[in-house]
Image (cartoon, rainbow, N blue to C red; front, side):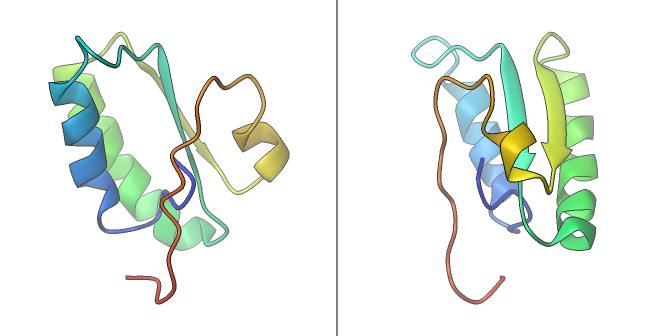
Length: 83
């Protein structure tokens, strides 16, 4: 998820988990250029994933090369305004 620090990201994660039959996930990566903001959201999402889908690998980064390597699909959730 590009824009992983958004407050909308936990809802996106829940939507993806609810639709695993149609959109199966093996891993989920967050990318955001605001590391501090992303860390808060990512740590909350880590709890959600641990409880609901512990088999999905999870990571987050501020490095675009790491974020966009070895991925099949990128959900761009970037918008103006930070919130």
